[in-house]
Image (cartoon, rainbow, N blue to C red; front, side):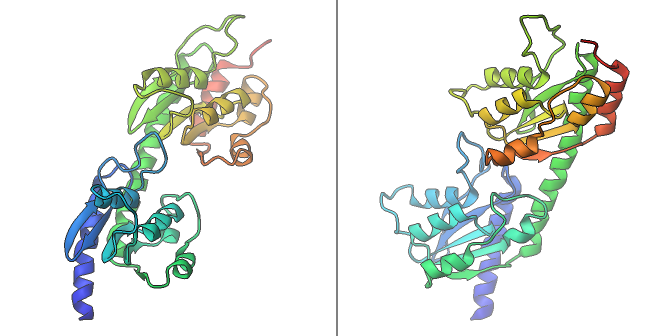
Length: 307
């Protein structure tokens, strides 16, 4: 009997992992009742105006699509390629799901792709719903491999796009360049505009962000650049940091530091974006000093700005 259930769990977990390979983020989930799939996550998991389109939520919503009341998924098992976050665990409890089977745990997943939280809530769930059966580590190596592959792809993209930002900095009036990327597509970039006394706000990051906002068709209000990454040849100043937070940019990848800019080009206030992100309690991820040496060479070649 135990082997039968394990074989069945592995079969459905394999399906969830296959969904994770096709998704925008490396997670997949399905809801099963009596051997029949009632709901599944999709390829657009994680891409929407809000931050709530997690694979587990999409699968649960799919299973509930023709129902109006929560709590009607009793007798169902949720198969998730990764241990659910706190938000998804809440939905699982409310939906009435009796059984949770997941592949890789949050701690292992966070080594390659970072969750909103760094902790498991399984102990809390067991107190809230002690009757729920939770099984972890099913097809763990397969699920973790998908996350590792996704991480490697991000690293390759980061190197490619930061080099593009640095190339823009070489052509700009001031030696700074920036691009905004969404789903691997450049949707905004800085230019070589010559600043005047009336355009003191033409920083590379601001130009790239403004360009991105204008190019997004679903742009309705501030904060619509969620799921976007800003690549900039130098760490953003305070003014640009505010724009990054206001527009909800998810990731910032920069090359040279503010200290580098101060040493080789012009003086800026020493306010680091990682400190502002922490103070603002923002979930914006920061990747610092990627190809820093290349960006520093551009600053050195341009020389100190005489004001």
